[in-house]
Image 1 (cartoon, one colour):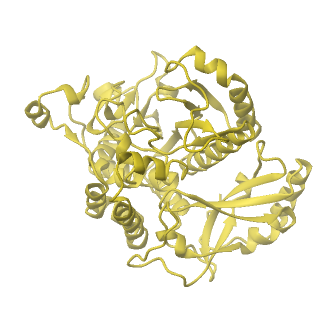
Image 2 (image 1 turned 135 degrees about the vertical axis):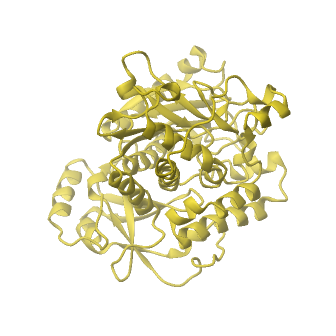
Amino acid sequence: MVTADRIPAGDEPAARRVEELERAGVELVEVSFVDNAGITRVKTVPLGRLPAIATGGVGASPCFETFGSDDVMVYGRYLGGPDGDLRLVPDLDRAVALAAVPGWAWAPADRFTMAGTRFVACQRAFAARQAAAAAERGLSLRMAIEHEWIVGRADADGFVPAFDGPAYGQIRLEQVADYARSLVGDLQAQGLHVDQFHPEYAGAQLELSVAATDPVGAADDAVLVRHTIRARSLRHGWRATFAPSVDPDGAGSGAHLHLSVHDADGNAMTGGTGPAGLRPAGEAFVAGILRELPALVAVGAGHPASFLRLQPSRWAGVWQCWGVETRETAVRIVTGLPGTGSWAANAEVKCFDGTANPYLVIGSVIAAGLAGVAEELRLPPPVTGDPALRDPIEQAAAGVHRLPTSVSEAADALESSAVLAGAMGAELHDAVITVRRTEAERCAGLDAAELAAATRWRW
């Protein structure tokens, strides 16, 4: 990725990349960034212009920092409005021909000012800074995002499920087998390693996991995976949505984040004497995430539609607690089978969904974890079972609390988080809060069914 503080110079790598993409049949290149409402925005250029934009970027307004998912612009304290311009500089190392969109390539962008310096609110750069801060402490992260999505018929009004059958059922797989084979082939052709695919719980819902990688790479992968799923679905006559809820009465779709912390001795999520075998760095990192979870909800699941999904007893992770393979806790520790911990042990954060900017989520989680490491935090006792079934007095005594139940509550937690405010910087921190609060205001008059319908195809 672009690591310099200024736009890179020199076009020789871009010329080589043009030749490679041309051989793959590429004619046009899309350059993308993800805004604070979780919407991926794009500019496109003919392939021959790639060397020029690799050194000079392509223009995009900074107004998107305070765009909502409904495309309504507001003003933040620092950002928003019609003034100014930015340059989107594609990361040539991630440029790839799109298997499900013939003739096109995609590359994620880093954003710079017209003076050639880093844009203060570039979310991809924020994730990279946090990864670098971990490296300064002798730590590295391996991360991946699980993808849950629901598929409807593209030729129908409203929402008509593309298939039916029992949750996780073979009957569902029989209906999606050709689609799944094409999709997995697309992702593999684009250099992604698919770990798993299966029918999920909610109606017409599927899930796919890819291999863990470095933090910025994991966020890039998330954008590319979702893009590929949507494109392949359309070519199959279907329409995919990563919205958190299609049916407010049923389970929703999440975007769980898996992560492992590594130091000079290897994976700090295993081989230790701490809870669940965590070593000190791993335990402190997870404890830092656990502490910041109320604020992290505003980053990773902060749209009003997110709270249609964030309900107890739906495995959505609405409780601020952790457990070993406990799917109702917001943080689940996965130990792996005996002998596999060095590569399989990880922590899963379950309360996030597809409304989130993956770069913001990953950067914020690292910042929270690093604060835990700096303060040598320890984890409270783990939780088993469903906290919703426990006596409220018993819950409180055990320190088990419900995560925010509204956008306002989550935004308040983010606003008061010194850890995330310091990591993001004033401009980005304020922009995220501005987007969350204004989306809440504009959705305030909608009931659950209306909210699900209004946001069904936004992500």
